[in-house]
Amino acid sequence: MRNFVVLVQGENFNLDVEGVIQPAGFFATRRAEAETEEEASSQVISQLLTEPEISGKGLPGHTILVKVAHEMPIEHKNTYSGFTFYPLEKA
Image (cartoon, rainbow, N blue to C red; front, side):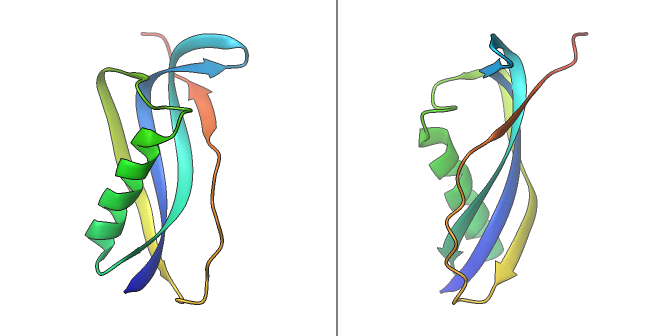
C-alpha cells in the first residue's frame, strides 16, 4: 500500500460562502492509502462526496477534479479535513 495526499477542486455546488447560500467551488486536501494514484484519487473523491459540507449539494453539472496527487512516505499519517469555499463568478 502506498500513501498519497490529494488536493481536489470542486465547482458548481450550492454552498454557504460568506453567509450566503450560492453556487460555489471548493478546495480540499485528503490523505489516502492505495496501490495507485488513480485509486487514491477515486477514494478521496468518494470520501468528499459523503462529507456533510458538500454531500447532496452538487448542482447540475458540478465537477470534482484532482489537481495534485502526491505520494508521501508511508510514515506520513497526517489527517486532513475542512474545505476552502469560494463563490463562482456570475455569468
